[in-house]
Length: 503
Image (cartoon, rainbow, N blue to C red; front, side, top):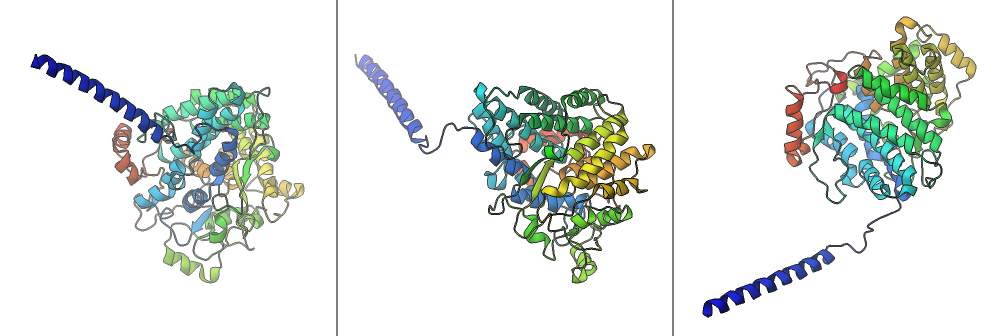
C-alpha cells in the first residue's frame, strides 16, 4: 500500500512539476519579448539606409577604399599609415580595417549585408513588395562581390543573417566558385522579377524607383561578374555575359549608380575630406600622376588639388615619404573628391565601366556588342564627362578636348594593345573606387603599375593578390575558417595565394 501511495505521489509531483515548468517557460517567453522592437517593418524604409552604407559608409570608405585598396592600386600614396602600401598589413589591421567593416559594419550596427537580408526577409512573402525585394538581392550581390574578391572563399549562404531567427553566428564558408555562380543567378532573377504593376519603390536613394535603370544596373553588374570569371569558367561567363548584353546595360552618365554623401551625418559623410587635406595621410600616387601627364589627360586638373601635379611613390615608409613631401609639395585629392564640408559623391557603378566591359566582350568575340573601338571611345568620353555631379563645380572637359585626348599617342585605339588600353582607361575612370581596380589589376595585369619591393614586406616582394582571414575568425568561427583554409590547400594562409577566378 505504501508503495502504491509513494508511486501515486511521485506521479502527481511529476505532473505538477511539468505543469509549473511549462507555465514558467511560457512566462519566460513573454518576458524575453522586447515590447519596443517591431517584429516587422515596411522594407522600403530600410532601402536608402542599405544603399547609403553600401556606397560609402563613412569609416568603411576611409579604411577600405582609400586607406587600403586605392593605395595598393597606386591611385593614392599613403604618407603615415603605410601598412598595406608596403605589403605588410598587420593581422589586426586586416581585421579592423577591412573584414569588420565589409561584413559587420561599424560595431556590427551598420552592415549593409544585414540590412539587405532584413529587406529580403520582410518582403519575401508579399508579392506587392517584389521590386524592393529584387533591389535588395542586387545590393547584397554588390557587397558580397567585394568581399569574396578580396578574400576568396567566405561566408555567403549564411552571411548577414545573424539578426534573423534560426540563423547562426558562426556561418560556414562557401567556395568562391559557388558564390559567383549564385550571384550571377541572383542578378538574373532579380532583374527579371521587377514588375511595374506592383508597388513602386520608395526611399530609393540611387534610382528613385526607376525600374528600367535597376534592370540595367543588374545587367551591368552581371556582365562585370561574368567578365571576372571569363578565364576560369569561360562557358558560364559567356552565357551570362551575352544574356546581360541582350538585357541592356547602363547607357550614359544619367544612368550612373551613385549616392551623395550626407555632410551632416557622421555615418554618411565623406571621410576623405578631413584627412586628405592634412599632411600625414594621402597624396596622389606618382604612378597615377606620371601616367596622366604622359597622355595629357585633362582629368588631372580635376583629380589634383594643385597644378602642376606632383605624386609620391608607393612602397615607402613614413620617414621616406615625409622627406619626399617636404613642405607638402605633393598633390592631394582635389576639393571635388575631398571638399571641406564633408560632402561628395560615391560612385557604385558608372556607364564608363559598362562601355569598357562591352569593349572587352567585343575583343573576346561575345555577341551583343559593337566594335571594341566604338565601346572603348564611348567609355573614355563617359569617363571624362562623369564629374559634373561632383561638388565644387569640376571643370567641364569639352567635346574638342575629348577628341584631342582620344587622338593622343597613348590613348588612340590600337587593336594590338586593345586590352591594355581598355583596362588602363578603366583604372582611370574608377579613381578612388578601390575595389574594382584592385580586382581588375589582379585579373588582367593592367595598367602597368610601378613594381615595388618594399623593405620588410611579408610577400617576398610579390604583389599581394588577396587579403588574409583575420584573427577574429580563428577565434569566433574557427571550425569553418579552418575548413576553408584546408579546402583551399597549402599556401592559402599567404597574401600571394590567388583567389579562384585569378588562377
